[in-house]
Amino acid sequence: MGLYDFTIYDIICRNAQIYSDRDAIFFNQIYLSYREFKEKCDQFASGLVKLSIKKGDRIAVVANNSDEYLILLGAAAKIGAIVILVNFRLQKDEVKYVFRDCSPKMVFAGQDYQKMVVEASVSIKSIKGHYSIGGGGVENKFLPFEVIYSKDGVENIIDIPTETEFVIIPTAAVGGKPRGAVLSQANIIALNVQLMDQYNISSDDCHLCFAPIYHIAGLSWIIAVMHKGGKNVLVDRFDAELTLQLIEREKVTMFLSFSPILKKITDKYPQHFYDISSVRKVGGLDTPEDIERFLKIAPNAKWFSAYGQTEAMAVTWCTMEEKPGSVGRPSILTKIALFDDNGNEVPIGIPGEICVRSPMVFQGYWGMDDENAYTFRNNWHHTGDIGRFDKEGYLWYVKRKTQKELIKPGGENVYPAEVEKIILSHKGVSEVCVIGVTDSEWGEAIKAICVIKEGMTLDSGELIDFVASKIARYKKPKYVTFVDSMPKTKEGEIDRDQVKRDHGGKY
Image (cartoon, rainbow, N blue to C red; front, side, top):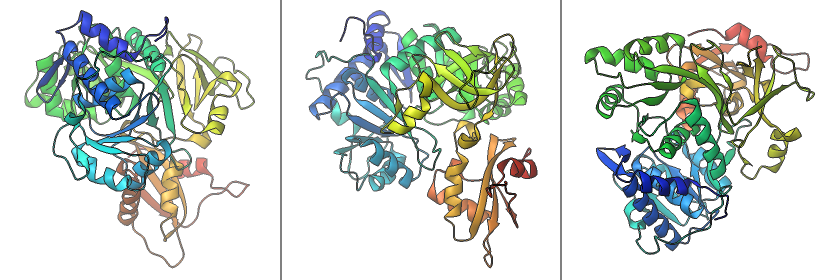
């Protein structure tokens, strides 16, 4: 380790020293102090080394949140291994693509996903071992998480620079296949600093995490709270009553929310009237109506608006009341400029592509040199999003660029091109256009407008089930409309803007 390095493992060591007996993690009725967490990370790291895992090797995880998930991440940080954070909602073929793309040497899977993971990894020659994670039973081919722990060599010092790659997060599939966004330990450390400033995180904070760790939002809030010496309360899946119970019992101060979480919390609240006065900070995506309802039952809480993405997380932020409708001002470690299609910076009030320079900007997409060169052209990270600045320096989100149009049902990212590709593989569909529509339950939902081939019959339920059998269920259309023909541009392509005007709206 160099003179100027400070890593995620250094955070773990520092906390074990100064917050030794303070609670670091709570999961499934088990508390881990910072001392105990470091001990487990050290022993697990030693076990990984004994299994020939070294700096740069990839380890894939398909699992719900758990204490073991964080132990694996801490151990990987110590030895410089790279953890592939796989969305557990993906279908087998999608997981198989991620494995083939990133070539992991080991795979960890929760009990619910082990059968699928075995099927997805059959032809992946890089994988040398399958291990369970998060508790529960162990399927065929899998070994228990505990067998990796080793006390031999726990004191060994491993030279891991801060810029070492830390995680690969497979992002939504722009062109039909996911891209693995690579984040270094330095990226995460910078993000910690920015989040600690944005949300005024202290060692007294308690973060309730039901946002999945595979998502940059869940991962980043966990590590930022850990960096400051706070407590992370983990749940493996969201449940409204359990959430209220944990807020009251653990004195939770902050959490991330995606529609329809707030609605479920506020609907459940009157059944018991839990004390949730400890909540101070909530961020994420939801409707103004549900945010307002929640703030009435959590009188000390503030809602934070922000803009970011896996490739450059949390680059702007503000409280909701500070500038309603905006996504905030640039954060303390971020420079933002808006450019037109010719690479010229646009003036205040004019929409342009949001471009970022920051120590949080990711390292690039795994194995995609051409895509990286385009994304980082002119020495800026090009987000693919359009925004505008007002005179006070607040950023207003406008839309996604046409070629990178994005739909966000319940906080997940879905690119229309991926869903369209699947729908067009159905023998009964000749043309399709997938759009996002405002949805009362999920904030935004997927709608497919389809032309059926002559002589064929097809109903919406059949098509929805077909898509759900091919890709993650959150990517399936919620609404389907059949039409006789599609509007076309003068170039003969489907006119997406006209389709949106004809078939968009609120549902």
